[in-house]
Image (cartoon, rainbow, N blue to C red; front, side, top):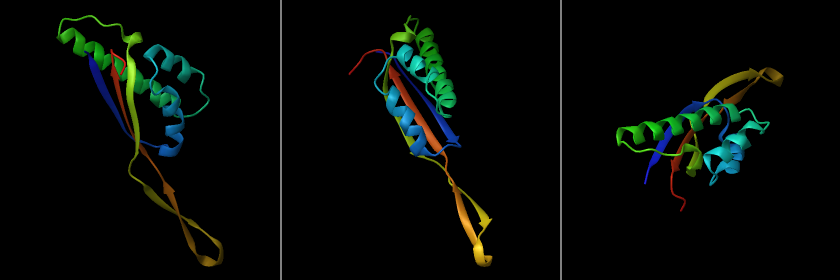
Length: 118
């Protein structure tokens, strides 16, 4: 059973927005996930597409080390997890001489693929 993992840290998109796209590809094959990401109009699809390519490359690299052959398009996304990353704070001028805090959120994304479905 071959599996691979890849992590994307400090993505400057809020986790709530990334989870919308992550939920679309959870449990799908790699080929289906690529098609879904290609036609999703969200900004985070570019980062998730690169992350998916990275985890496929990790799986192929691990397979060549073990002298095995795998079909990367048939592998299944077993888990994709989106967590909150570091939050940057900026300040903006507000009415009556006050300042308002602007929280710029970031995300950490972990993805695991495997060649056997659950």
